[in-house]
Length: 416
Image (cartoon, rainbow, N blue to C red; front, side, top):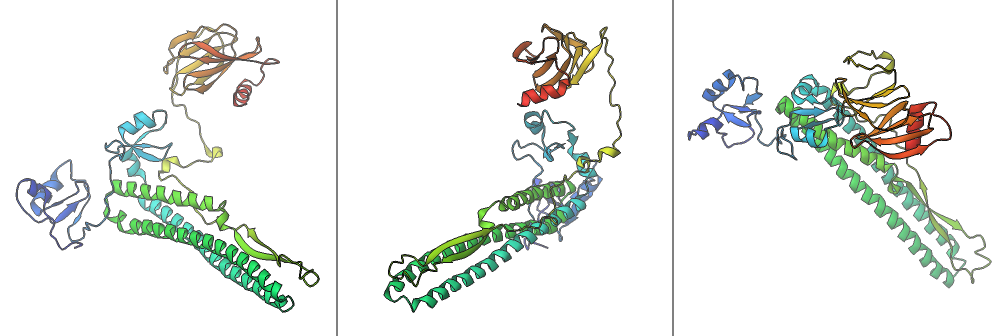
């Protein structure tokens, strides 16, 4: 048993009876004695809970919260657009425009936790490998820098015999400059190594958590645990991406341009050479790195060549005139444009909600945002930006000729 202190039975404690627990229920988050565990197994509401023998229970295991940390409500929904579990308030406040919201229970049931765990661990190993390469390369770089520093000192010693007192002054000047540059580069490299080693420690902790926490948690907790670790791993992945543009990861070489006129101008010489740091980009082999993948199978992208179109819904529309264009708005309502005629707003079931009182012969339409659409009027050679809620024209874009490829021209003009 993980702890020498006996774990009491939760229900018995509520009844003022001190009884040692025989099992632990991860869903109830409490211990149960043999009597209470029997009721627990027979009850409809708790018979499917995940339990474990009390001797195998580890109180030190980190508890994975199943409640929303922002709203305090139970996580019961899943947003496939943002790949994250949500509560009811999350959906209403932050994901109201997201489509395909699913029940978290159904997502957890379909998700292969072990496969997700393996994917995250593979990504951790890939990041660790890349970070290890950076540490090794920078360590070797420091050694080369020290060797280059020694080479500079040797050059100075070589000409010192020919320069006398003036050389002593110049030697101190160049050595101090080289030493300062080397210390600066070593300090940068050492700081980077320390920073990376801290990342490595955190990644190894995540790796350990995958092996110690997840096997002892409920499926929901496992899903959320892997999800939380996955988010942290993605932060490390972004850290790796940022390192590619980080000046600290570049190779440094301390070079000195020798002055060939030294012997001729010893008395007039003010410097033995110019020290520069030559930076070389570090090559990071990213082929083995695992990019972010959705934890839920339903988010996996399909090959468009293998897709099959299905009719999800048929809507009967009673219109006497021909239709030149139609779009479905973000909220499910429809905009239907009569052939060189009026712009009609329909409900999601195809019923006429209202006809926009905008003069002109409309032809094509596209949506800009929640309440704004753009409509082409080829005979007038213009595009009107219309607010469909207050039924007003907010902007008119005049064209040099009639619209041809309507949707593309609208999008192009709006982006420009």
